Image 1 (cartoon, one colour):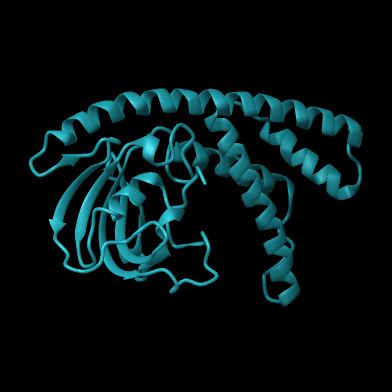
Image 2 (cartoon, rainbow, N blue to C red):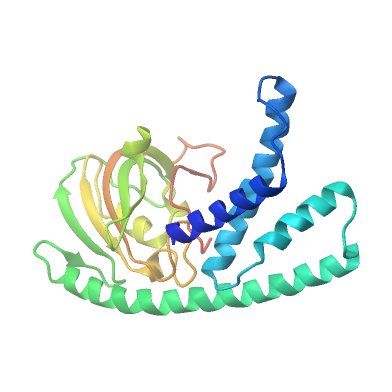
Length: 255
């Protein structure tokens, strides 16, 4: 799909090059600000066109450029009411395509996840809880075990089942600190199995993570793999005013 985006961007650049003369060098503050305004709009448009193309809804690049220039000159060929009507119609089509794409992805991921979890459960050292959470003890701890109301400081790397890293406190060079009850169910359950100083690997089914909808970089019906070390446990009273605030954590979508 990256090649598709490049084609979209290249087409945009070529059309603009053929119809708009470059006004001058970027040698003043105003010139740089003006160019940045145009580039910002262009980046937004190319991103939207790319996303819509991925869903199967194409657009006429020449007419997009013409509409942009006509609007700047105050000579739009359609009324505001008509443009709103057509844009709303397109938005409805995009919404239906997006829903269908997510449903397809969820179905495919669920089938892959079932196989992945079944195979992982058979690995040496893996324990499966009643909820379906899978864990491995990489290093035992000797400190306190957190309760749901406690605040924990942890280091972790979160991966998808294909090995893609979606978040890492190590890459960010800053541990995460949050209230146990505020995170996804799989991690909440997992943390209560640990003692301060321990390091576990958790394989979390989608129903204990972000379920059928996913979140951000996490696709729908995706199991998550966390290698997590419990650095510190702060008992009740240490987080006055924090409530369920999550700091660099994996928020619980069910709360």
